[in-house]
Amino acid sequence: MKDIAKRFADNPLLSPADIPASREGLEITCLLNPGVFQYENKTWLVVRVAERPKQKDNIISFPILTETGSIQIIEIAKNDPELIATDARVINYKGVDYLTTLSHLRLLCSQDGHNFYEPENYPSLVGEGILETFGIEDCRVAEIEGTYYLTFTSVSDNGVGVGLRTTTDWKNFTKHGMILPAHNKDCAIFEEKINGLFYALHRPSSVDIGGNYIWIASSPDGIHWGNHHCIIKTRKGLWDSKRVGAGAAPIKTDKGWLEIYHGANENHQYCLGAFLMDLKDPSKVIARTIEPIMVPTTEYELSGFFGNVVFTNGHIVEPDGDTLTMYYGASDEFVCGAQFSIKEILLLLKNS
Image (cartoon, rainbow, N blue to C red; front, side, top):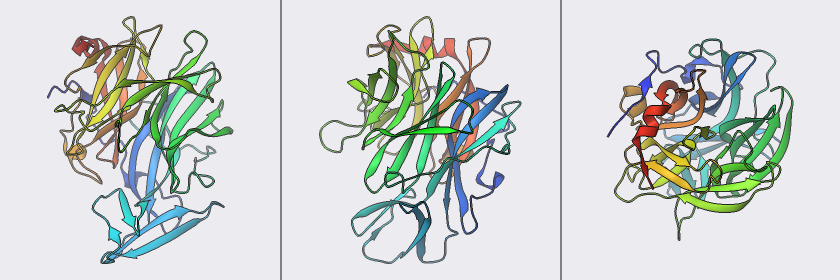
């Protein structure tokens, strides 16, 4: 498989030990999948912080949020016959699915794009209400006309959907609730309107008819979405045979809207590829890469909380217009950086 990523020499940029847990009694298991934006001449990450209690012998314990926002710790004996715990990320107990960690979103910034720190007086974003009791995850950031749109995965025992909050100063946020109901995730809003409309990629899921495909939708206001079209499907026998999902906001090029997306196969290996949409009608896919542009290869991508994974939902196009600086989650545990040439990605696209 072709891999054209130029990984940062100082990867991983962030590991779970690099920032403190949100409260006593919890420890950070994973730092991963940051949304990315530029603000006040700095590079910022909206990093997903996944926490749980320190694990004891013969017991699985994990936190959930109550409807009032307090944390409840659930403990289950590993030998309980009603426990299914074959996946590091999700368990099933008495027929109900739970996440093994509770995620929130935290702001980090950097002057050089490599060394990140947690600035003072910026709030963490945490789950709120009955639709976010298992936390919020994997934020994507789009800036449109001075407003930042934060789409993220809202998780609860009701299902997995897309939440939205907006801000202009990163200290005060307007909450818009769940804009795409369960089961949906991987929502990336385009950073400019097309024909007066907002556009977004998203990923509804089907366990029976259909599959985990990328869709596109439009909106008059960025909150109410319709006119949905399925545009990218999984491909049997290829690296993206099991599921696909959008990365960050599509990149406008003279050839079309370029989207970096993730795909996974039956062995749960996550790689990155790209596709190109028409500039005037992004529901039309012009081209797509056959092979991935990034494959898990380094130790920190192959081994971690959930290994064999590279996953991105944040990037910056550098001033030269060709260099794409991408921040990504490696093995569901670390935050890393890599750079690509947009021209090189475009050359790998094959007409659909």
